[in-house]
Image (tube, rainbow, N blue to C red; front, side):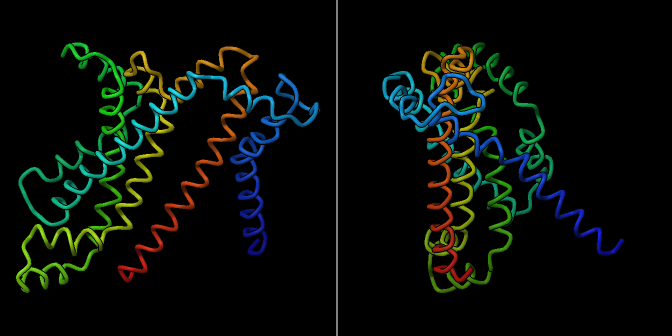
Length: 264
């Protein structure tokens, strides 16, 4: 029994990984398949579906909208995360725990509830649905992730370095900019990455809050209603997979470089 337990665990891990990643490996297979039917056996190799993507003007507008929203969300949520995590890690004040709980609440609320609630509030305020309303919604759900990441970074920071900077005559703003931010740089990179990915992949809130300009997930959902468009969706999914791997590699390289520079 002692020897069978590790073997059973290994088998479970293999089955779990196959179940998790098998659909991803099917993307490049059907993206290059010369058939409009997503099924085996394969018909042949083709680049036709990628050529079809270049003719989709709405696709490029949706991709541009998603990139604008994702970058804005990553920056805003990271800024809010820095301010919140710094206050939580460095100061004691009345209502600290309840306030922290409210900030983290979007992690535990269903996105459909958040989306409907924000839609009602925005319409009651008389605000037109646009890219900005989607950015507001995505920032709301991405900020708790940034706070949790950056809170760990600020709590693990050596405070003696900050105190030494102040003792040497540096201002608090200068200390924050020249000492604290470089020390928490890996956390900042992780926060930007998670905010960007969350916003880029998010569908439910974007579906409720988007106006006449769709985001990429909303556009992909619209394509799924037409069976003839499925191969185009597979080709688009393959390109997004490649883009995600490139982004992850770049951010991981930047994170490791930051850790080397800060002695992490």
